[in-house]
Image (cartoon, rainbow, N blue to C red; front, side, top):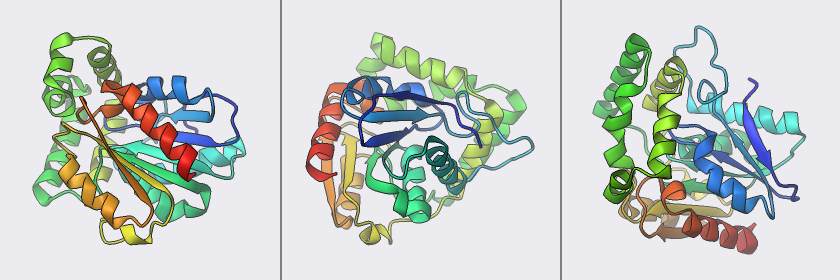
Length: 260
């Protein structure tokens, strides 16, 4: 699978960022701009999302599929290892990347995510969303439907660059690729009982106002990991890297300089 990606920086350490659902690599613009001053930064679009192609006729894309795509990207670029950082769905991919390609990781960062699978009703909702995406051939209904759970009320009210980037990412995405990924998320593996096995240096980060992955949910993840730093980002909700990039970038730089 040939993924679209953007690359900046020439440092010895490579950082790969995995975006959330249903977004693309542009959500990491602030991280790429700052971190590439010191590190090599890659921001791919996952399979069937952004500018990366979908697999024709494939109705489901699993988190394992996305993890394997990243390993293939590292091969293509001649990279033996990376630090991987994923937000929300990108975090689910991070667990699978560790599970399937631990030897390719020198560190792990999970932002605004969780380690448990969907409850049955949530999984059913994802499958219904996938069906609607294919029926309507558009993500338009998701734009307003999701924003209140992803961003601070003041971010939405301001209608500034964060909201505009969010809207563009969702609006321009591939409904069929997004539908396939939604079905894959609905049956993702449970990693909550395996966190103690992840001995890599790990950064666990969440926005203080995140409604989907609040600090009270993410602190136990950090506690279960043997080698983790836990950071709560002020003035941010689920899209912490976009809403408060200065604080998120500072946390990443501190983690990398001390732990990786």
